[in-house]
Length: 425
Ligand code: PMP
Image (tube, rainbow, N blue to C red; front, side):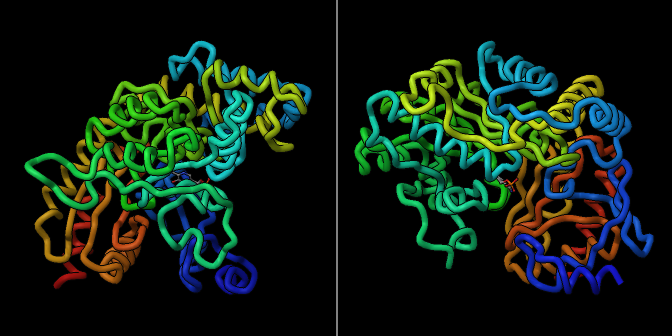
């Protein structure tokens, strides 16, 4: 009955017709979810990479319930609320930016959209209104709203949605074409070439994901973000790091850009922030950029945001999520489980027929197949065996909740091995 109602009434995001209704979930606990027929599955994709603490985590449920009975919402437009203030302060602390400021949003796409507006308005306020061009990688994904889609790589994001907002230019994805004497190319020099081609005085910002997620779970080559930071500084271009998917432990660190020791000018956050319990996202920035908006002649503040920016319930849940990650040692745990996952997948799958590549970092792994069809077959094989993974084109994404244990990792690896063998046999 639910499947029938689903087919008649739901429009699924990013799903071919007739696929989403196969898995109608009604319950979740730990890393497992149960469908309407009572079948239980190990969630190897954390919902949509967001359920980092799994389902029904008692601490998060308690925080959610307590806040709902206290102050459900209060807008940050001309007022404030306690959880939003505490969360913004906690994020500044976590990021090592003592005066860092946060704008809250409701989704990763909104965080991207906000960051685009912030960088353009910032340059305009600083007397450089022509600095509007936004650069991004050719295989990036930054969201589904019009400007976020216009800067995303895949034609799936923007074909047929025009006219698109202007001022978005793609930069070749590093390591995407040739490997020359061990050096990954193209590297960051492609960004500098793009900046010079546009005229540095016209470029507002470069947006980058530390691991290309929708673009195939591709970690950026070591050193790339550091080189990019230097290039942006040389040309007055702001660096926006999109950690909507990679933030909050997914890669075995609080934030993936930390590995490179860089400080972004803006950071977009989503998914793991509220661990999927409520829609919640954020853009953080430096005091210097945030202060510039005091001089806005029309408002004397930032002309951007939403009714529910900094929703009290979302902020309270996010605070509980951050506390849980810290107190349960989930960053270190994710790093250890990530090694087991990426090591296991590499050992067991890399040389199988039909597998082109196995890669990943932390609990964010990708198996690239020779065809989209084979990836789909393996995904369906895993589903029949009770393990959910997600296909991003020919790549299967494996990203279980951070609370996953060693036996569950081994089950995911075994299941993928068996499904891949069956799909190629
Ligand atoms: N940025 C990245 C890197 C993402 O992976 C996504 C979502 N997959 C988004 C932004 C958009 O987030 P949302 O789906 O919450 O709008």
